[in-house]
Image (cartoon, rainbow, N blue to C red; front, side):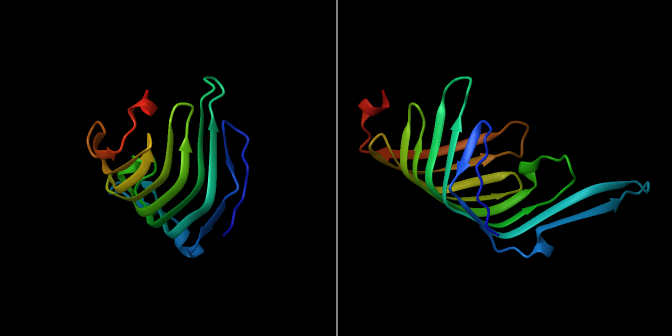
Length: 171
């Protein structure tokens, strides 16, 4: 599949190729499970073998605040994406996937990050971004992030170091 579009809402997605190598029979499955009382409840399963965006660009503009975020020249590959469970259940606890991301530049009104690269894995509400590398404040950064969504409140663990950090760019 190949999709190219430009959406005129609060954000725009421009100049991107979207592709997937999924079989249509594996793309989406709905089933009804009968409870002991004979009541049906809708279960939804989504499975995708591989999905990728090549040479993507996203521009987000907040019209109220005037803030702008641009993500330029990025590639995203998601593999083994599956979503299961009852409709209405917490999405982040029922999704599983692996992926890779590379991006030339992420820019906001106050921050610029370049050469962004990471690998991400998610399963059962726990997400790991490892390794995460980027250039920020003219320094080279490397580390990892873990997000645990299994409890009542999200838990973040961030381990990150930046070498040759230029403090004047931070101010």
